[in-house]
Length: 384
Ligand SMILES: *Cc1c(COP(=O)(O)O)cnc(C)c1O
Image (cartoon, rainbow, N blue to C red; front, top):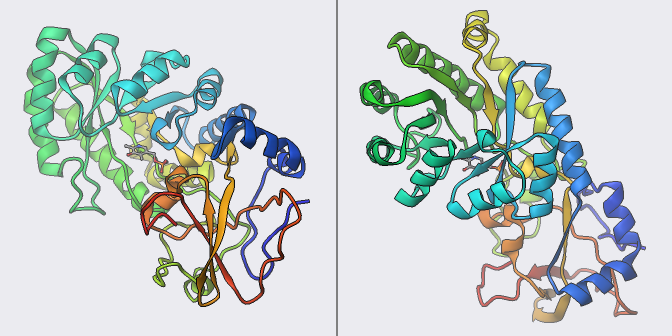
């Protein structure tokens, strides 16, 4: 039996395979003993299903969408291979991630190098293999074009726009800087030139507006006689972890550093994953002239979901090393692992979905009116 937290904690969503595994707890415990803690268990069939579900949903709003799995969300070769076999591409940001994409069957035409800081070596690797390169700034564009002179012509470039909603971002170019790239490209041997962005917020309208701005930019690019290459709308689509979540109630709750950060992550968004992405495209293409432009030039819309494509694709199991009393009815449950293993916790947010607890032996009952915090084993106070 899985022992759940009692009380008001929101219910986490769990797939059947996860529930089966949790219910067979001696098996999971044996795996943790054998492989070590933390143990990340992944389920490639779920990756296959998720990709097909995304593809089918996106087809309903635009005929030419490409999904590229963002490798930074998870390093599992098994999941990457499952995505690639189903037809997905890969969004990579280093030579290591590129190697992983090659080794796990992603064809080069479906790989994008989006990393904002690429070494000369990484740029040359992209040029020689015909991998689409995302350009972060004019300085980088000049360096890439220079390298192309020695390494060959460039199949596909994407100019990264700085989102209108993030004027202070260190990534991407302003509209003026994007326009300033065009004269440099007139001389160069580049097959196709697209535009890209990545937005750090979870509202449909923000991405839809940036997509409309991207279409406007491509039309200007076209008007200057350059070959348009599509729009990459990045990743960052929210994922649904919980049945229901009340941020107001949560912010009144208990927090390690007594600093609730409600809204850091929408744990139960109304529109999650592929439905969220489809809504962005549908809203942005409401204008028939915009849709007509994309269709006339056969321009793909490329999406790079990371976390949201991994929905229910795996679990992380941690051994408990110690339960220490901290005073004031607070207890530290020290895990054999670190908080960095769970990507939402990178952002300093309390992680809302409660864990499943699998007791190995008869143990002391949890105290009522006490607070239990899950802590990583590192020496950082913030590893919570
Ligand atoms: C982080 C990132 C992604 C993936 O983000 P998720 O939140 O995991 O979907 C995709 N593209 C770029 C450029 C990124 O920086």
